[in-house]
Length: 187
Image 1 (tube, rainbow, N blue to C red):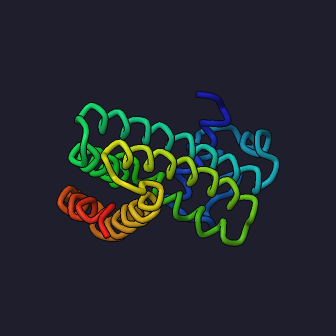
Image 2: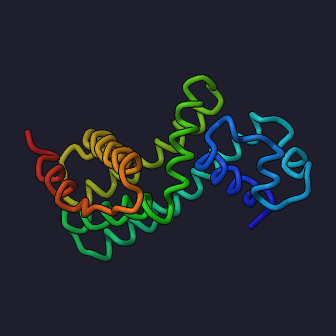
């Protein structure tokens, strides 16, 4: 892992714990256990640090989605494999990757005021939609590109709802995802 990635990962953890107000160069130095001034050496401005953090989140998300795709493909064809893979991914995001999701929501809100961050987040969202479209099409869903956005919004809503509730409770999301996928492509 490069020093830049290490700093961005520390910024992600800090955003999850402290929010946008807690994200400073010095706080990232402390969170990454680096000498003071290290973060500002690599990322001179707050904007540069925010952009690097968004890009690092996109890298993590790409890896998560690749693992989801592999799970879906190994589970076989049809919607059952997609249900299992989607439930697994959201479960990961609610447990081991919880900090990354909290940071993503913090940065998403900040992006409404910073067009340069919004552009990076939109590009990441485009990659996510392309993968979900491919998975839906591979599961036999007609008009998969039209349904991908709705499925992502539903999954994002489930994720946010459970992030805001008891963090120790990991729900079985398969019935909810299965019910949604049963209606996808109909009507």
